[in-house]
Every structure is written in structure tokens, then in C-alpha cells.
Image (tube, rainbow over the protein chains, first blue to last red):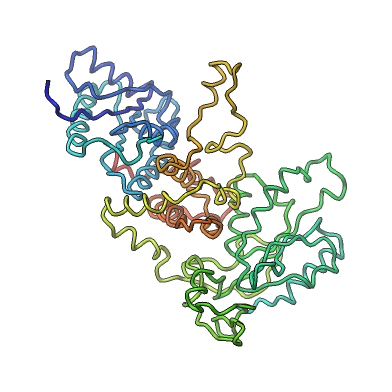
Length: 140
Length: 347
């Protein structure tokens, strides 16, 4: 046993690309940290800012939202709405003083299992030195 | 600011005389010292009570939500109900109406907008005034002849420079002239504030950790009275995600019902819940807040809420070149996108 801090990441993955990408990483037996709690959503455009704030409130150390590359959205433009809305979420979280590294967004296609594993490895490595996220965590 | 109260009164009187409007929402002298209060004028005789002075802070667009809830403009309503409602709007208020029109919340035919241009003036900041005058008892606040204000206290009238007591939002105002209107009183003056987002400079220059401490201190004061929500012309939802009144868990609430009505935020004024509430409110006002600053004015514990809303207004402008409330016919900020929207933060 080592007492290294293991960050907990909540990942909202779109059903059509990123979720399939993480699945590909799994079936291809690519190794990546087990710090992620994946939540499949139908589209990154359906990720409400509420989900992100709520994840942080319930103790997530990092939140990832991942969707299809622009142009590849199953719903044509859901990821483009997400891009705009979540850019504002990111700015807002930074504005109130949350470490900007704690919220990330990515485009991962169904074929990018390798990119997904790299992404998670990097995310875990950036979160580890930050320590537990206590700012937005619920205390009641 | 030279828009004359006589002209506004004459317009209101004319509208009420002709029966062109159902009633007019304007300002009259309030019971709290020298400050104006919102008022509803139903008869032409009352029009003389209407006031126009630098204490007309209130965004009267707020009352259009109540009006719409009563559904007076529905086809089946009484003949009288089909008449529009007259509203006295400053530049900022008219942009609030423009957003409500953009969201199709209010019909253009349902409102008659009596625009008042603030020209190169604006409204005062009560806090700045109190700091400036100390303990002197203020009786009346009027517009001066050359910008500036004339404040009458128990020790007589004093001239005060505009810069000393003008509200921050008016200092940073880009459009004192009503954007949508049926009639305008006052001249159109081009305003180009030197620093339209100047009030954000201080907080943006802080390190993340200092910013956190700032907000932890400020939002920690929140008593969750929801005054900011109640006074906001944009917070017109019947059911608020922060305060789900229709969701009471009883012995026979099924798991299914609980799953469908998620309680996102607890009512306890703990800081984690306060942050959640204020972050959600800021997001819900992104691209909609027109900086009338009513939330901050209404806040009983002086939380600088404007710094949250102004930040997103600034980002909307800088990231997406989106101006809030200038055109009721463009799609709203988060229901649209451009191909060239920045994505350098996305991997």
C-alpha cells in the first residue's frame, strides 16, 4: 500500500464517440489509471453546467467532458453548443478561484482509444500535485 | 442628463387618456427617504406623481414577468387585457426587454416602451453616496445641469461630481439610449466608456488562490434569501432549479419520482451550496444579464454579484463577440455557435 493521493475524476463521455473511444481502450487492453468514473451521456451538448458543479460538489477532484470532434457529432452540432457553453463554465470556475486544471474538455473519437488513455494519464498526473478538491466539496 | 420629467409625464398622461395602454409602470417617490420606487399608474390624473431622478435604479422590465404570468395578452382575455402595458425604460432596462423579446417571453405588441435616455448621466450608487456624505440626511437627489448631481441634504443643496457617486454600471455603460422603444425622451448620446469591464480588473489581477479567498468570504455571507433572483428580470422561471418548491419527498414519493426531480442544491446556506447556487445563477444569466445590477442592489449582505455576471458578459464579448440585449432578432448566446469559436482549451 502506498498513501499517494489518488484523484477521483468524473468523466462525462458522449455515447457515440468518447464512450466508444474509452471502450476501445478497454477492449484493446490499454493500461490507464483507474481514477475515472465514466458517465455516458447521449451528447456532450447535453452536459448541463449543473452536472459539472454537482460533480465538484459531491467531491470530484477533476471533471472531464468529452465529445465527438467538431463535424462528427451524431446530432450534427451538439458538441459545438457544448464547446461554447462549457467555455463559459471554465471561465466561471477559474473566476471563482478553482484551479483551472480541474475542469477539462476533450474531443475523443471512437477510434482514439490511445488518445483517451493518454488524456487520462495526463489528467491524473496534473491533479495529483493539486491534492483533494476541497473548495466546492459539500460540507453539510 | 436632461430628459425632462415633464415630457415623460405628458407622454404617460397621453397614453392613459387615450386608453392606449392598460397601465404604465414608472417611478414615484418612495417611502424610503429620497429614493424613487416602482409605481403603477392606471389613471391620467396620477401621472403627475411620476418622477425621474438619479434614484430611478429599478429595472421595471422585471414586472413584465408577472404581467405575462397573468396572461393578460392571451387571445381569450378581456378586451382591456389586449392593450399593451406601458413601461418606462432606461437604456439598460430596454436591453432587458430586448432579451425578453429575443427569448419570446414577451410579445412586442404586449409592451409599449417609453424610453428615457440617460444621455451622459445615469443613476447613483447608494453606497457611494453614503460614503461621500457621511451622516448628512439626504432629502432629494436631482440631475445637475452639467452632468453631475445636486443632492439636497438637511444642510442645504450640494453639487457632487458625477464620478463621485455614479453607479459603476453607469460608468461602464455603452448604451444609455433605449435599444427598443416606442417613444424616446432625451437625446441620443454616444457613450464609449474607456474601460467597459474596468470593475473586473481588480479581481482578475488576483492569483487563483486569492480569488478563491475573496469569493469564499463574499459568498459565505449569503443567507439564501433569493432576493437576487426575485428582483432579476431574467429569473422568470416558475420553478427554480435552486429551490424546487414542487418537490416534497413524502412517505409515498416513489423512487421514480425522486429520480425525475433531482435536488441539485440544498437549502442550507453552507458555502458549498451557496457556491452552487451562485454559479448556476451566473450560468443561467450568461448572455442574458444586461448589467442592471439590481441583484447587487437588492442583496441584503452586499455580495458583489455584479462581478460574477459582468465576467460572463465580458467573456461572451471576448470569446464569442456577443453583445447582450442589442438585437432581439439574433439567436441567444448559448443557443448558437460559430465555427470559429475558440477551442484552445479542448484537447
